[in-house]
Length: 152
Image (cartoon, rainbow, N blue to C red; front, side, top):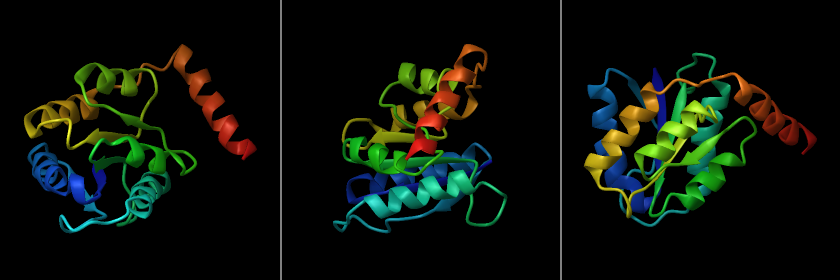
């Protein structure tokens, strides 16, 4: 799986840590920035992650899933969700990570780097990558989300 990852300055160190975890798990990384702890505005980076996931056609600049990181993860999740087709979920614990995949088929994971320690972030990521979408009654709900996007 190719995973796009992006962070603001607050999430940079966790991004670098999670890149190593992604490689250890046997996946490929598409790093879309930022490249340091210098202050940066995050919306364009998060949108780039979302676009890479939505494009998902196997091109070198596309991804199967995405990860966005910031201080709290909230703004990063909001920015990623502005891209039609993105279902970004803020998951600072294992339960929300599991449910975001099982019930919402989340394709972008948001984590707050000032909230979640690297060891827990590894656990969240591993669970999130492994958890399958349940389908069933949740398919119609996701279709409803897509219908809202289509009205925009």
